[in-house]
Image (cartoon, rainbow, N blue to C red; front, side, top):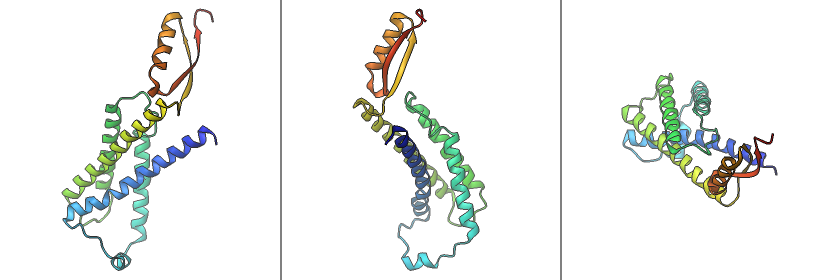
Length: 186
């Protein structure tokens, strides 16, 4: 299979994981807010009255979360970015998601101040830690000559060669120098 297939599959998996993380942050947030950490029985779950409009609102919320993640730069390449950039993106996305949750017309009697704080903290922590772990896994793979991108350097003499050496000496960047083209000869 082509590398593009794996790239698309990984991107879709990452988007799905982010939405699942947002959904699952509700459960411990609810438990922390209510002070009760007991799970309802299966019969109690079946007795819950769920309205179609609530399902539509929650589906719209998840689509909005996906849009927020994309617009905050979650799925762009962070090959050369610093940890502080990923931290800012996660902080912004989590805060926007929280703002949307506060503005939605959901009647959540359990949702007090403690729920919103717990939900925000859990969502931020899970999203940031998974990005951090993913980045370290990619560094590991790239240092083992996986997930490499081929590049051509166009520059002048010793400066282009120095850049190529710097890139070759840092395998975690994930670049393979294919050729150096001297700009003076072109």
